[in-house]
Image (cartoon, rainbow, N blue to C red):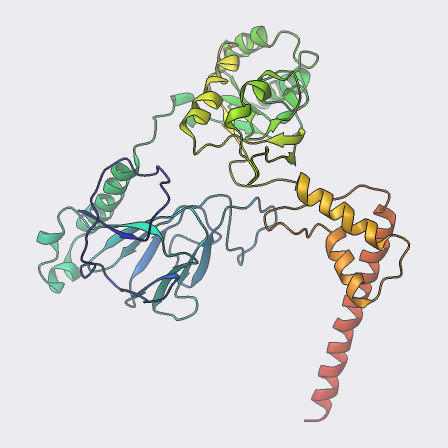
Length: 418
C-alpha cells in the first residue's frame, strides 16, 4: 500500500508516474514531524531494526550509524566519512517487525542522520519544507502483522516477501527500468586513455592472447572530435562504421561515452540546434561553464523538449552501428563557470603588486587553490600567477606543519605537568 502526504508547494521532479492523492490526515505516518519552518522527520529505531536504501554510499548495506547527504557531487576523493557521492536516491527501507519504506520526492539537499547523532533516532531534514512523501507498506501487511509473535517467528521466505513487496511497489511508483541486452551483462573493459583505433585493437588482442573474455570496450572522451558530443574524430577512427562492424563480428561492442556538457562553438550543429534548450542564468543568458571541451552549455533535462532534442542526437551514432552508450557526468560537476572564473581573475588582479597581510594571504590562497564564490564551482588555474600560487601554498603547508608541531609540543608539556 502506498500513501502520500504533501508539504508546501513541491517542485515537480517527474520522478513518480502514478497519480496518488495526498492524505489530509498525517496521523497514520510513523514517527513525527517537527513544527518548524524547515523540514524534519524523526523516527525511533528499535535495537534490531535495519535501514536499507539511498543508493551508493560509503557504508555497508545497513545504514545505521551513519550520516548521508543527498547532494550530487563529482567527488574524486572518497573515504568512510564522505557523505555524498554521485547519486541522490531518497528512498529508505526500515526493516523491522512492521517494515515500511519512505520515498522523499525532493530535488534539493537532504540529510539522513541514521543513528549517527542519537543511536536509535533516524532523522531526515531539509532546508525547505516543500515536498511529496510516499509511505510504502507491504501489500499483505494486514495479515502479516496480526501480532508480534507471528513477526518474531516468521520464516525467512516471509520476511523476504515483505521486503520485496516494498521494493516492487516503489518500482511501480517511479517506473520500471528498461531491460538491457544480454551483452550488457557481459565482460566490459573500460579505462580512460584509449586515444584511437590502434589502442582499442591492442586491448582486444591482449584479451584474446591471455584468454580473457570480452564483450564490449568502453570509449572515453578521446574518440570525439574536440570533445564534442555525438562526433567521432575521423583522424583517430578513419572508417568508424566499418570498424564497429568489424569488431562486432568477433562478438565485441563499442560503448562510447556521452557527456551532459555541449561545447559552446559557433557552427557546431548540436550547439546551434539546442540553443533554446540550454540552462539559463537568471538574466536569461546561457549558463556557461568549463568541462572537457572548454566553455560548455548544458541541456535543461527538466524540459521534455530538451530531453527529446538531446535524445534524438544519439541516432548519429546508432546509425554507425553503436548499440549502447555510457552516459557520464550526470551530477552537477564543472571545472568553473564563466562568472566565477572572471570573479577569480578580478580578485587575483587586486592582489597584484601588493603585500599580503594575514587576511589577504588566506583569502588569496583559498582563491588560488580553487575555492570560488559559487558553492558548486571549482577551478584550477594555469596562469602567470601559478608560480606565486605554488610559493604561497608551500608557505601555507609550512605554517600548518609548524602549528601541528606546536600542538604536539604543547601536549607533551601538558603531560609533564600531570
